[in-house]
Image (cartoon, rainbow, N blue to C red; front, side, top):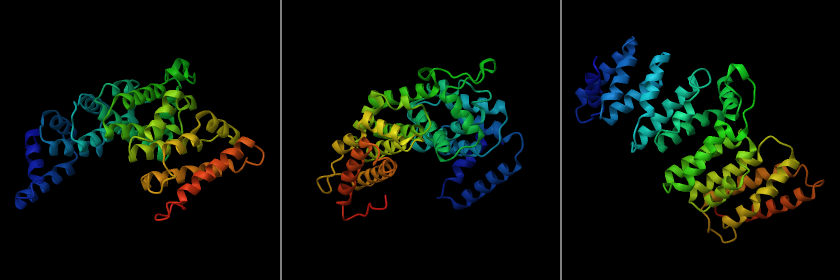
Length: 332
């Protein structure tokens, strides 16, 4: 089947106005895919290169996402996806990001060492979608390939001659990603892009070097994000929850809260004193944050005066959240 014939079948399969043609086209596509011969992947890639139909692009990407490819095919596909131009429809941005994330997972550590450098050159929506999907997998759980990817992003050298050598933090790929994300956030006025960038940061907070989060540029933007709408505020507070929840001793968490002034800035930027002044989604996220922070601090509040002071700040915020009596946030 040629790419042109494939495109026609996909278009017909999506046309509900002609049910008989739709059924026949869907059946033919199913039979073609079930053959699973060596022509399937090359023809799907050719279809991606030639089609102007959104439905055909989506079909090709979805099918390739689910199909095993050899290394040469993966290289051809990633080169094609890296050259996508903006604007793309949102559903194609998401699908391109999913496929690129899969390709990075497969090849980054072993052979595609420039993956993140190349990804930086793509259009911002695809770049952000790819990172969001890629780090979602590492956020939810780790396998050996995910651990290897994180090690490299944190600065473990890929070179066999210096394997195990730690690259300076500021030169790591994770540092470059964070710098690029904050640049996008400060220069971009698109709310969808800002939300995506904050989502990526939230998924990175728990595993990148602490210095990449605990610096003036990043922390100050997270505080500003509390004023950028519901979605941005919820994600920014989620970043603070991830930050306090990192695996470190309670005294270090107390110092972190002191240096960043997180509790004070949340209180200053989220209006909890006037009933219904803040959207309930933000209030629930604040309640979640202060609840988890309070549980972290309670272990040391009797021995650490600063922890005790912060614990009372947590209580103040928690009781303000409880004042939203029409919606239960007590289980946060």
